[in-house]
Length: 132
Image 1: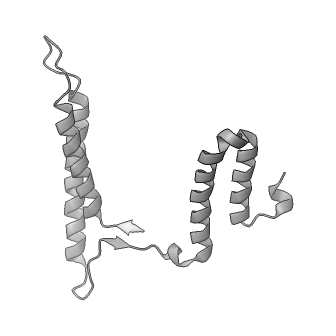
Image 2 (image 1 turned 45 degrees about the vertical axis):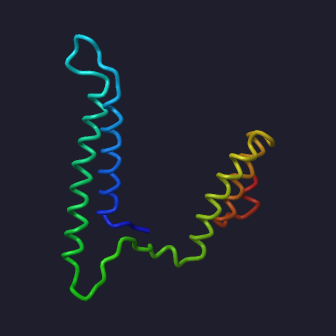
Image 3 (image 1 turned 90 degrees about the horizontal axis):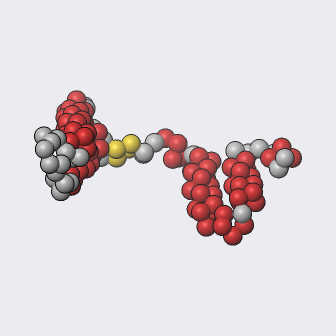
């Protein structure tokens, strides 16, 4: 799955704006020209500039496309048509949720064993090799 650069640029600009507004509330240090909000503010300003560049890039990509093609915000990757790859993604998400829910109850060793065994299964490793 791929989002157009303009989408990511817009999110970067939005996040930079939120950070810049938030650092305004940081306390001032008496006798200092700079305060604790300087560094996060500088990073946010840089992020905003990069976000604007991404927006420009995304809009240019739209303009450079052939006249007959339709501009999209999102493209689906070719691997999403492969059931094996989709299953691997589902197992990845599933075992991480399983780990979070079960590690306190089952313990690390047993949970880690099940976690890795699920990955070996989705990678089609033989059981005789996966268990040891």
